[in-house]
Length: 377
Image 1 (cartoon, rainbow, N blue to C red):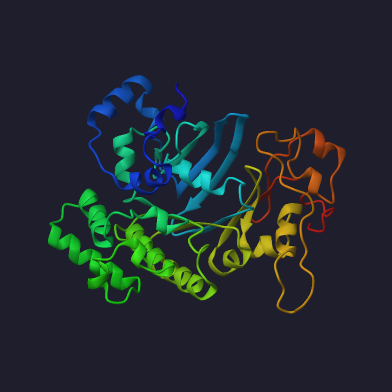
Image 2 (cartoon, helix red, strand yellow):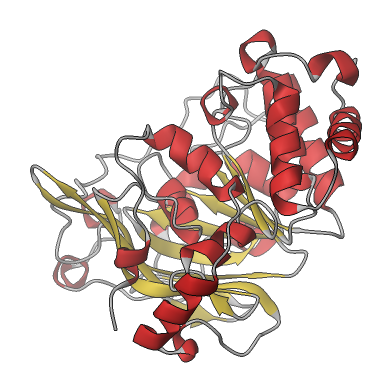
């Protein structure tokens, strides 16, 4: 069977940001592609028995071919998202969070990106092996994405109303008048003042908070089962951050699952039910938010939590994690966190710890997790 990488390419003459932000909205027929693909691979590669999980990612690995060598961006990531679940994906910049999200919908630029292994089961279908035509029907309709920077995710050449209407007409059999009325109503729902006038605005005429609200409206107007929000509040001030997060939760509650990608542990505490922690392309810890915050099992998670400012101790010096993240081009043989870990052992430098299961549906990739040696039993 061919690698799923052969199914995840984009035309290199198109700017990557525009392709990633807009190709999930495009719809198309898939009859011919499906017949050819199933003839080559068999229908079993596409369909599977549905489970209670909405999304089931198994052993996902992604690499980038660079002039300096092969860069491992995602290494064996496995996670699940249940129906109406809110999951936070956290970690330092460059750890592989956004690449993981883009890989779920095969939005990676290829080359240089390649999905080298794994399965992404969504509602019983493997997204990595679906024909492109069927995947386009899922993008934007069943799975939508709120991108990190709306100024680049939205087309600068088209009015806001035109971009919203395009989404509806590609996935719904509606007249231009119905699409216009629905788009205007969604701008009202997400709290944009004077939505009728804003339909004629270009993205650069809106504030950062308003552009993000447009992205939220575009992502939710089709009623997707899963919403992927890639650091949706990074470029916003604190007040607008709170409003956008509240709006996202209100719009998705009871209707959609949410995968929230962020590096802000405070947002995870306020919004998420479960948290997945990534470091150097791998998942190092997973569990319910309250459990992970109370007793983090991995030293990296402990370091993240200790580095959060404490209101109870104003003026105190912030705790930082010593050292630097290793180069993704030259990851160490053992644990990638070994050089920064206060509990490092010889075994850590020789062997790569796998994710182990612990009570309360928790997982951690540390030889000392659960022993009490790191301060968390």
